[in-house]
Image 1: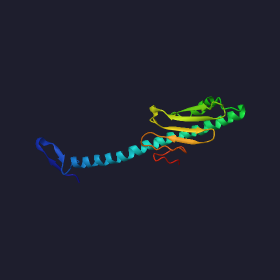
Image 2: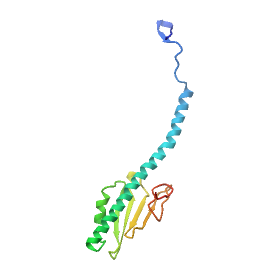
Image 3: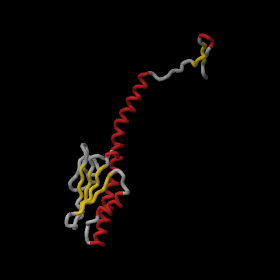
Length: 155
């Protein structure tokens, strides 16, 4: 049962109804702020890892296409053409294939696009399958594999 009490001027109000105190509101704001401070950086890292996986997949695809071209032409001289087909599947990185001077090798590089938040990320693979990666400040690269985590871990 709701109890009403009369106020001046003949208006009625609910008796015993209270709102939140400023202290209670500030505690809730502080808790939400702490949760956001933890969750947002982790989410940003998760998004970057997803973009890195797209780039490494495109690198693998470009390497496979380059090897198929080599089987057909016995040279890697036009590896940049087949790399561009693989580059269409990833927006956060640009792929570039540089053939060796003799045409018997290549290096494919995926460089992070600044507009996608991937500045400083560089992943490479060559015709022998050697992989390497470098990352921006705060992200460890790895000279022996494609690092997909901040720590430089490859898996």
